[in-house]
Length: 385
Image 1 (cartoon, one colour):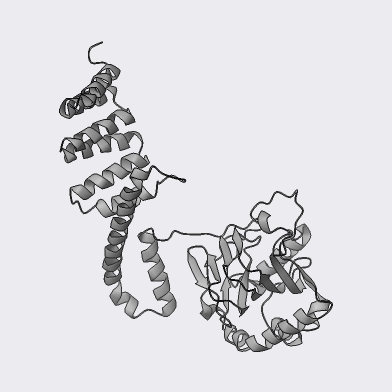
Image 2 (cartoon, rainbow, N blue to C red):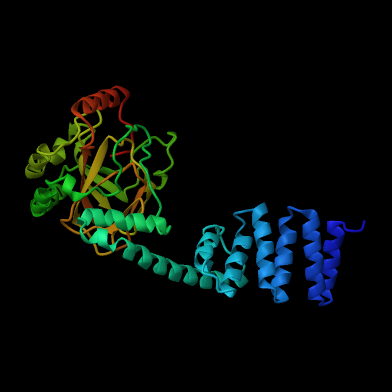
């Protein structure tokens, strides 16, 4: 019937085939108006409008398409492309919004160049915005401490969507109201300097325990295959990630600990949890060459974890949340392992880090006692630190 959107669309297709793009553009526009919320008709009208040299009309149709499907990748891509052609200031941000919806997997070859140019445009926009925001906060940042400057920089990065917020998501025990840091400020743990000063002693004891005939070297991750855990599946019972435990689930591993008296004495002075069946934990973690530890989270946010790198081939890295660091021998740090983290040894050599757990510093003595009692009563999950 006259004015039927499908009939108008068919006529538009015929006009396009015979090369009458102006008529095809007009008919698709009429079909889209009559159909209302038809994404494909608005997109076809936008494409024809651009083809006949009417970019602002095309942009208006893309906005109509986005009213129907606000996150449609093709519509967002065309919007960004049109804004770029029109030299609009919002083009850079529009590319970022489009690229955020890019589907996984291979895309048609004709889109590859468009996406590459869009990424370049978006990166240039991010650099401009970063400079503006950095300049705006420069007076405050100049008088800030190093830790405050780092947080301001992360605030800026989050605002630009270069990074995103990550939060504590333990697999089993979540204590409410605790501060969340991916990597904790060094100022909260003044004993880190003492730990770092002992690097050579700890490394020497590591060599003793590794050469001992009866040292106990076990897979870092060990849990029953039927348990409802998936984050460590590739490394469960896998010798590519192993550990020499000094303390394990609250018990001294005498076969190893007897070779490491100075390391054990240092641990005794630190604020490790004392939880029957669960903690303290302390170990030398060995990651084989070309081995990745997949993204995962720990089981209990009432504790934190400390790393002291000992044998670190160049290129080994560790990510917590949005921040990635390269381990450096003798440079310790404390992190929250209930925030998503992962690691990689891309080298041909073994990587070894000394790892132990700590109480979260926000917990009061009463809260520590309550946490310890409840975890002990329920039992520490298998497969974790």
